Amino acid sequence: MRQILIIGAGRSASSLIQYLLNKSEKENLHLVIGDLSLALAKKKTNNHPNATAIALDIFDTNQRHDAISKADIVISMLPAHLHIEVARDCIVCKKSLVTASYVSDAMQELDVAAKENNLVFMNEIGLDPGIDHMSAMKVIDEIRDKGGKMLLFESFCGGLVAPESDTNLWNYKFTWAPRNVVLAGQGGAAKFVQEGTYKYIPYCNLFRRTEFLDVEGYGRFEAYSNRDSLKYRSVYGLDKVLTLYRGTIRRVGFSKAWNMFVQLGMTDDSYQMENSDTMSYRDFVNSFLPYHPTDSVEIKTRLILKIDQDDIMWDKLLELDLFNKNKIVGLKNATPAQMLEKILSDKWTLEQDDKDMIVMYHKFGYELDGVKKQIDSKMVCVGDDQTYTAMAKTVGLPVAMATLQILNGKIKTPGVQLPINKEVYLPILKELEEYGVVFKEETMPYLGYKPDKDFS
Image (tube, rainbow, N blue to C red; front, top):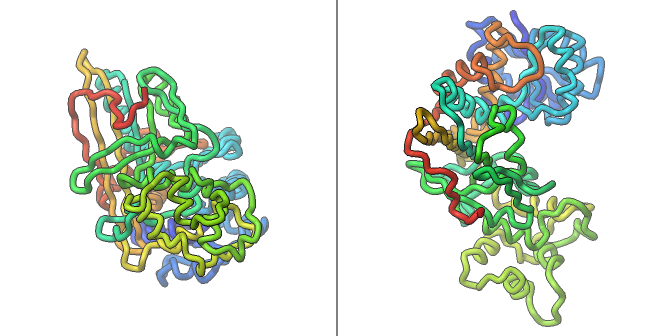
């Protein structure tokens, strides 16, 4: 049997493993699922006869090399910074590799070696990055194949809570890594190009510069700018496009409320707070407020944020129990961002019966035969349960499908790459539709770049 080594058995691996197990008889596959936690790896095998769980410490060089050498292909579902040692072993052992992570500089340096050994090192084939690349390139290539000229490309994606599980004033729960949510947008100004002009949004203004998106059947959403919208300009062949903008989707009102944390300084991850392990929620809030001999923490908070007691923003803060003097954060030597993450996790963790939801939205502006047109492409995917979430499905399924395509010799182009070529995205997008990942495209007159906030 052909052996697939899957390194990492976390939440994102659920749908990936299930897909490959369902294909294992027909495709003559045996999965080896390796994780630091043997119990977790065993759980993911579902007692399937074509799966074996092993305890795998990727920092154990001999153990890692031995597992990779026995495989026909390797999937790494590890955190992004841990892929590189696996990748280097794959070069030595002459095994192709699939990950859902961004291509790091260290990974890119293996491109020549991968090509010399005729190995496919497929990266960025999860959700975002991944499905966003494939669905965008499909439409862009179709426009170009007709002789069209690209004028505008906007791309938005968000992991949200499904409508039936939306039970708080923030219309949000953590569906993926909470830390990434807390730190979103930091590390430099967001940059994009609008009608040929470069634009920049500093972090302090990021969550006040949003635009609205409407998705039939799911209502209105908002989006704030990703840090670097221009990262894929050359990759997509859009160097001359007039408008290029990428953003993160949230429900309307989230960004304005989140901005309160930004303005207070609660999302800062650059320093540790004193006595963080004994600090109450109320003490945490008060740490960012000016001293006053008589005003309460509540009054000081409203004054500094310029919100009234009957403002929905105030209700959102109260809902998080931020002013509770009896709740202790309980984190030693923690940064403000780490403490905020802990507080939010108490309220925004998905319940057992909750479902998550992925929303993706692309806008393509182009000119064809002298006529300007626009295509809007939208996708909504709702999770099944807490194991087979929409996030696990949209991250894991493309990884699994690409792995099988490589193993079967249908994806042949060697080297370190993204899923932007037709041999990759056409079959995978088509198969994803069988699993409810469907893009609905609508053609309309060209609207240009018309954000709901003034970007001029």
